[in-house]
Length: 156
Image (cartoon, rainbow, N blue to C red; front, side):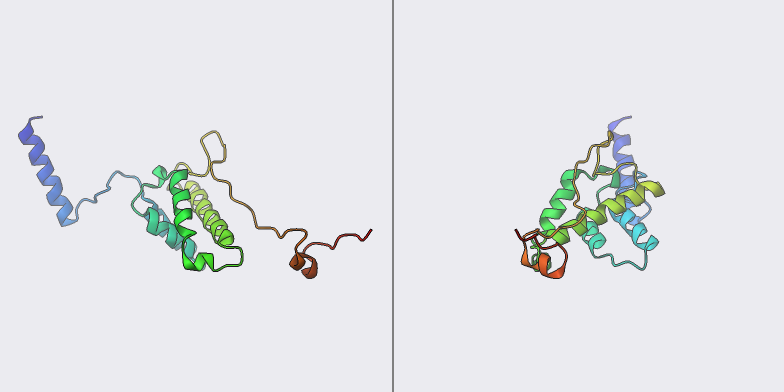
């Protein structure tokens, strides 16, 4: 292919892109934003606060190209928000909910065939991002004993 042929093909592609006949990421793979839209359509009754936050940060990244580092950077940015810091745990609960939501979006998208891998595990099944199941109260906290969450110590 000569230089002139390459320039002609490039000009045609630019023209199709301007007319909207070609998308800039027409690789055949879905972006995370498209997967997030499909997820929100599949679960219309849920609150999608965390999904929208993930979508804002990763919208144009192909879903299969999102890495553990990308997810961790979203979590780091999320922890700086006023609303996140306002909680009693200092953002730990919001971080856990964000990670659980991202993990669920990926597990769902793999099951539906929109993605082939998750950034939470390697292909060998090793966890890359640990998601705590819930934040537990400390055994010696006054709240835990008063609420009955944790039994009071046996007097000696």
